[in-house]
Length: 230
Image (tube, rainbow, N blue to C red; front, side, top):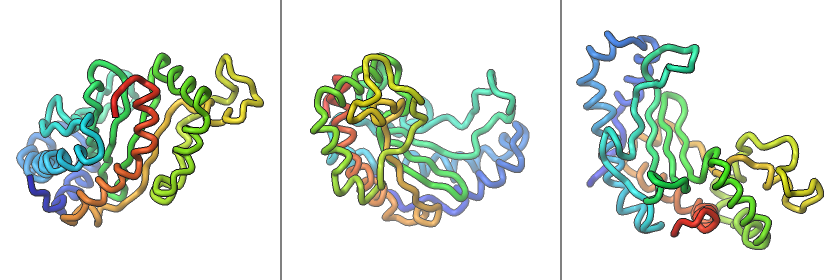
């Protein structure tokens, strides 16, 4: 599938939605949403499929509006004070093949007016997966240090995102552990910023796929730690 860049109206739609976040406006503009947002997102997902296979055969690009790689636009307002019904951004998640049945790493892309970023890893994995990751860091410290010092990863992302770490060491790990700051992490991911202007260009697919490739050392480590193939 050929991807020609996101259209200008992609970001304009979300800007206007932010000012008119109600069902009547959305229903009136739903054909525009389908044409300017859904269609380009599905084209991007389709084009990303072959690129992901060059990185790993175990990550999926599913060009479906529901149940695929595209996040729903509808917000879950059940436990939120903000009752606006729609998200004012688009997001794509390229899950590991085990992602539906087990917690595994994934690649991510976020698109909204004024903010575009993408990368990969695991955000707030559940306790069992988190325990496995910490165990892998502790048991194979050399491999973890190699991930963090990887030149391409550092050049692309700078460092791992902070990810809301614990204030105290997790159980079973001493404060003087040489990797205690990493063991305190509750998320393990890397992200880099781009721009809406870049997302309008046909070569945006290459920019994102090369960024995903740069995250490979981290993704490989996380896959191995959680029992997933890379």
